[in-house]
Length: 157
View 1 (cartoon, one colour):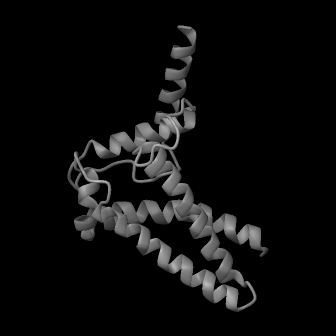
View 2: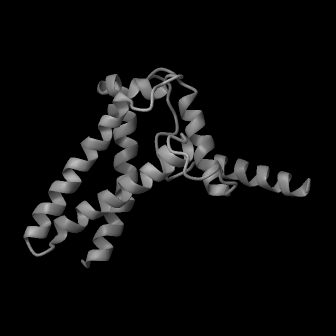
């Protein structure tokens, strides 16, 4: 398998891994670290930020060990995890939660659907009854709502 394909497949698989981690660990046995992310009036740094390290360490180790072996498959798996982490940061922390004021909110249908799904996830302040645990995959109903919103908005112009 070539390097680009390994990186891409890893990136895509990370959505499922993230979904499972979010649903079963963050809203389960690791709720202690994730709870502050669901509370209003939180500070800039959260205990939830520990999950960055949980994903970054294996990514770095894979890239280091894979780089020592003349850039074998481990390096490109680590690279796929890194790229997913960058996408997660940009979408979750920059676009959705606006932790960094790097650009204004977009009117893109896909990003609006992501924001809506995440808002639905955050309506639950405790670990039970959660929904929408993914990050880049958006349930179709939110995508359709975002399309309808954009169509209604453009028809009023």
